[in-house]
Length: 203
Image (cartoon, rainbow, N blue to C red; front, side, top):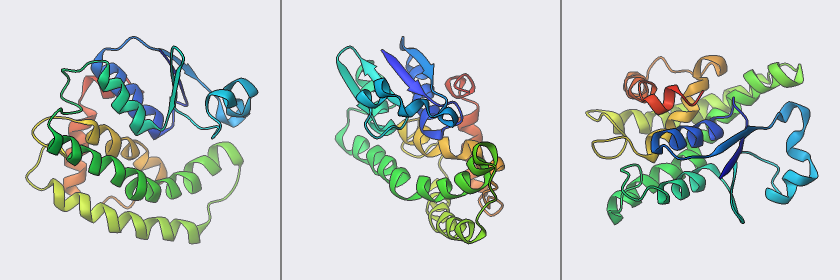
């Protein structure tokens, strides 16, 4: 297997963390998005969206990070990240979709305005866009905050794909200046994610 990724990307980091957690053998190649390497013809044949991460497993090519994580779990069928129990699996899926549709999109606004623009575009942040992002962040962070009360992990009693998926966007919380102060349960839970060996080695 081969994974194309961009190190600073939350979408990439969660996949790399799952690879490490499952101890899967995979070549990892970084693409420099700031140089437009994702627009090269060879890569566009793999992913017409010109986005990362992208996984190649023989003649099978897969994009979308949450789908890649699920596929990786099929390589280690006894793992607990992706339960065989239909209800637990549906609960994990709920949070993967929630991250993609709501929490991640809110975080992405602040990442783009405060991190990507500064590092790669030499542009100033749009304060109106940041305000919109912060409003969405508070809306969905409150959902996660309430859910995590009394819980060590998002689903069940052990780490799952839900934790890697949602947690990946908190990696840039300081750089992107998320309004994290009210969310002590999220901070407590994310500290658990940060202690995972696979998370530490996925940087």
